[in-house]
Length: 113
Length: 109
Image (cartoon, rainbow over all chains, first blue to last red):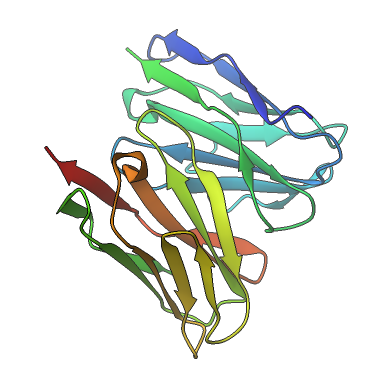
């Protein structure tokens, strides 16, 4: 079956703009994670959804970041008033239930100019 | 907060030499998972260890989980060019997965 997909694969935006990043998890996976990864670093946890609800959003760096998963499948990560420091690869992962084996999407490379 | 320390950050080896990376958690883990990320790629799941003292093998890769379930290691025997990449451990504590910073395996030319 299809794996985790993310769109767009690349996003270039200007400082101060709003962006949305989309994640399509593996069908039937109830758990969905957002991470961001800077060059040479491990994935940095942002938020974890179990179904439609955010079970843990403690990794969101500030209130410019917000994520939704209204129907328990597709999720959107929203970043307001982007800053240059937001530039990174944003990874989405899904797992069947909870923090089990995670299957990662290819990521969205966000560049804020 | 909870942390998983992973060392070394980099390891340069000649092809055919062995490679080892170590992870140490500040708290007892429910399980530990290992992932491999190729250059330009995304993390790919390798294995999960659950039991205290567990040892699992995948061909040339040997994974260990410590008796106290706070540390783990990955050992690759006789490295090949296909092993190049960054290896991450990720420990589960409650419902969180806490990631190490990764060890980059570099094959010397």
